[in-house]
Length: 332
Image 1 (cartoon, rainbow, N blue to C red):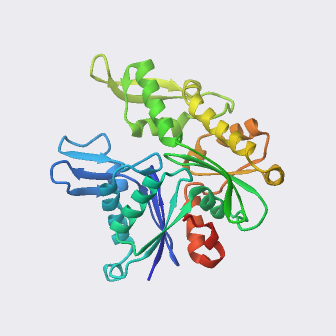
Image 2: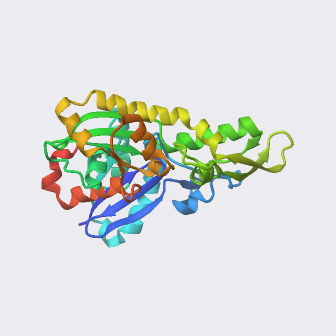
Image 3: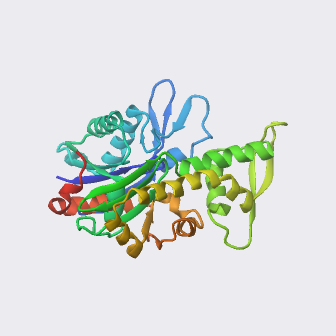
């Protein structure tokens, strides 16, 4: 019987099978026919369809803000991924699933996650908060009395947590993350250049010239979209300074959340964080200068995990490998 860890994210879904490692790392997107509900594509193939489908096909993410927005489509997506990683003969024995969740999740959202995973074929569902999973994945000593702080910037939420003795001592969960940055870039280009672009183009701009902190020379890049005045395709140029300015508000919300978490941290653990600093994980930390911005705001050492996109699922995988050691970290 295979134990499975799932990081069901707004942007990407990652699956870790015990003894095999990470076997799925794909966008959380489903493409299906509007009328029949027939699934046409899941994951990367479906993401390529975003903004490009005919009227009878819809491609969308069933996740929003780090939680399930569409239980039925999450069920379809997870079934697809599980059938890919588990041979049919093994699906007859349903797996035990450990799934990571935002620390600020509501009871209703928690129930939706559990029901979605069970509907997809799980025998048992256990839950692990994302800050603790991040800390374990980053190699921090979460079961000891020593305090450690993690900031996980995902696609839908930013999870900020101080962990000690297998639990969250202080945590802040804010619904501001990578998707919000993309949305702001779409709005900015529309407002300042009268150009309509999609989320995929906004993500390219964010990765190409987006930054959280000035790092010397500014750059610009061409952006293609549809002119809102003429209705024709058009190319405009945007520069890194204006993109950084348009991202300032959500980035400020993240740094404010970190300060709030530090303010409610017990003094003894705060002294540990002064010594050890902050570890950053999640896809959002790949924005240029993100670590520098947080270090500047907090005056603390900041380290970005070596593979921030997979930190959460690696942490969940470590829990599967050492279940008894990490049992107390699970949420109930």
